[in-house]
Image (cartoon, rainbow, N blue to C red; front, side):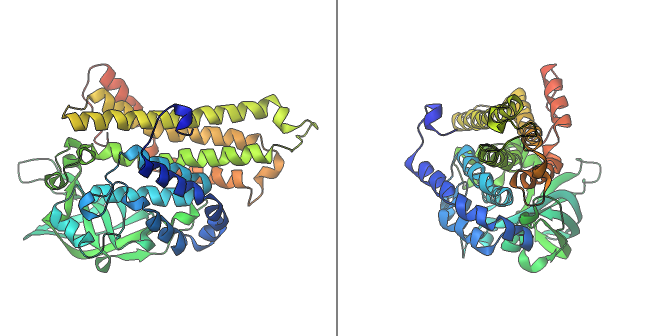
Length: 399
């Protein structure tokens, strides 16, 4: 939906960023095949994103960023994924790291952006790292899959679990910030979907990570991260999980719009198996209607979530358990709904849609890849919402 259709106004800067994203549709469509062949995005696509200012949308103003409401960033992601799902995915998961950097100790921010505020980061958050406390920080090793866009980045966030103190607290899941010289990229990205995302494996062996380059997931959940001392915008007071879950769900919504765009164009003149024009066939129309409804619902819920959270952060009001649980569930539920919608578009596109190179089929394979992400599994999140509704505590630390 366009802003005008929602009867809402947006700032000139936001409007310009959205237009830049729409202006990239044609070239990104042309690069889709190249991205699949490369098994990563073309360098020019990352250069285009940087030139457009997309990676700065949630970056701290102290380092050249715009500190925007996340909804605006994810609307740009929607437009990019509409043309190329892999490009939308990489923009989304790399771009959100500019926000996380704003939560870290300023010494870490200086190391990453002090000489070049266009530096970007990739990640893999599964707590697989072996963590050994040493003077001033940690000795750190491990191997992590699925670091999207890592070929284009100079730093990484990777997950580990800080051991519990003797007789004290439970282990603390954290992300560890590591420079390019301290990790290896393993070229193992051979997949049936999101081939262009370049989500390769990372390996770290006995790197030293100072304490100020470690970000606790609990700090992010409690909204008490050290970077808030210098980055005082309300956007840096949002819960860590609430910002991150949309990074892996909104690309799926944009890709669904891309599938619907193609579906309407493809079926405009196609005759179905009984010789009827597809555009006049009830099943064809119903599949399009369902996809349109799913897309609109997902976007409206995303906008509502961030407007609600940001207003509370600005006012210094607490976030309720039901808001956090429901918004978290809405994010992963949107991917499930979008997968089903694209499957119906594919099912109503005739037998030739199964051929390699059919755009709706290609997008469906990407949708299945989106759905595999751990944060896009709705079952646990739905149970958490139900528990909160019955008066139990919110137990999802990514909410």
